[in-house]
Length: 390
Ligand SMILES: [Zn+2]
Image (cartoon, rainbow, N blue to C red):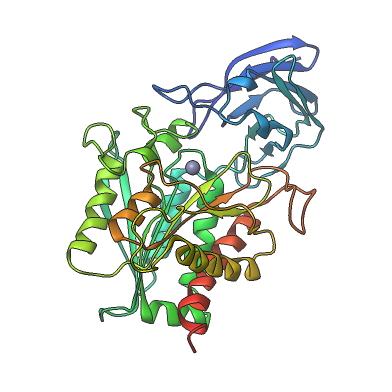
């Protein structure tokens, strides 16, 4: 019988210390992010196991960022080299005393890929950017380089050059392995560039600045959160470094130039994933920073919740009852809220595993679910700014 081997030498690969610990049972661990202790994401290839049912034991789950996630986890597999993905075929189990998460899977191919959640790599992103950039209302540019020299892609979407009523900023994937954020952003952009009459009105009356992947180096390295220098890029928005966080320097330059030129900001959306999430939800600044556009924190929150109710009307899995967060960290959304004194800033979080809330509770979440939420955020902009005021 051929030897079973494991590989991670590809984009977003992560997994170490693979060992056979029983007949058809293999243990492994997650490699921490480069220069960091963060860890949650794994992605490996198993060779030589076609036709066999293997049991995997992921050790060291107490050291992962979100140990409670493993109860919700449902890894995904591909037997066609990553073209299509599905859920593992077997059972999962968490054993806290043994500090491990186990799952079994009937392997179909001689090069089966197994991952924490549906991968969404930089290569795929660049293909989508080319597709979006072909639209007549989308202008693409590279606004900077990562530590390892990869491009930071930026799209500006609007119809014509006339000054627009509404300024919208969209970011995603500041955290390396938050792939749900990329599917959500993709759903948002696909709707925005569609022929739907609401999308057309959005492009005519609003301008969209979009950075769909802030942290390509971390994504390619198979990190969970950080960039290649071990920096959590969502904690350095107030003072980024050209050496260790040039990705944030690049985004800040475009953000600041737009504001310095006297252009308005109205809405800021930063797509993320939350390993503890039991459904899609959003959190947002608590409004304790200056919010003169909205008079009081309560008023500010009422506007955000009104916006999110529009999202929930379009996306049934979106939950409204997880909410305001304190404004202590220099995250991008809080930075934006302070800088713009009251832009509606929100951080939608996608779930990675089994849904435990909402109408689809009890089933694993899919990329299509993320895309529906993304389109719902785009439609909500139309509803909130245009339809409500008619
Ligand atoms: Zn995140």
